[in-house]
Image 1 (cartoon, rainbow, N blue to C red):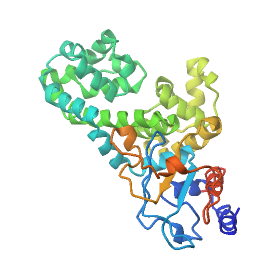
Image 2: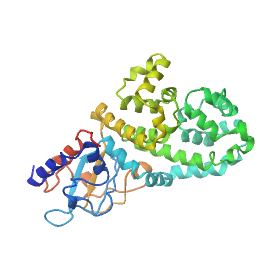
Image 3: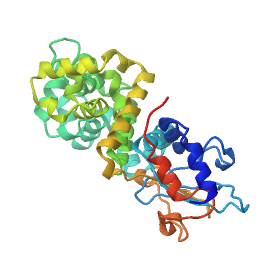
Image 4: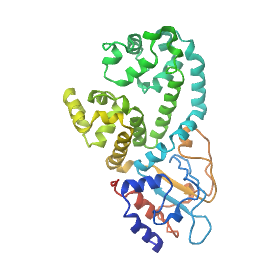
Length: 361
């Protein structure tokens, strides 16, 4: 390791692990002791592993020219923070993806014409869009169940949507409240633009999950945590349950016992009221992503790529979101090897930083 890299490693070791991950996600590849290594731009643009690249204006080097290339494996925490801190931009990119844009345009143009539950569940294009938006895409063929859920509404405590335990059904029935609003149910904001927003959010999570399921689970949990009101609600949603089990080190087999005992255990390890506090939810998600890497250490596949030889207009998750972008012949994607020993911040050092144990504030 060169002298500069050795000094970087010593300085970096004093930084709490979680803070180091945040710095990596926001464009710091060195340490606060060496601010000259921060990208001149406000933040580097990250790219998903599956073919995307990352561009920035470059990194100052001892030699002067901004020609430095670097590569590091990112933890799930850093990858999650990179997406979550740019969520509006990522959602906009997802909405602009041709397939998503076409599906949303069709949905918004036709959903208001639906007057009954029967018309809704039998229009596959509209119904499948709405089901995916509310995380129920795998139940698309359960028309009988969903018909009862929608006809029952949510006003009564005994309504099917309120007794199933899974909060997704209640949210779905409330968005398309035929029981209370009749033929005008599909004109409500929750059934139109509200559903479209959820569809885009769900699609983004699906895209992220193709590279790192931990990031997708973290985003899903953050988006839906406030709808959970009991341990039973956690048990009813497989994704929410996975996040909680992983965050608190609970065995997956713990979900195979008596349901009342399972709910009691979840209520013991997690204060359900904390799920209404965004700050506490965020901390829980970061705890989950940290533990996710421990449990799936061999499956971490996200990379932070910085290629300062030229600017590429493909940013974080653009590839997954359908935004086209090409990989230049001279890109770090094609040229970089993990054993690089170029002057300054070496890839070995960056890999070491990314593997720092999480902790601290």
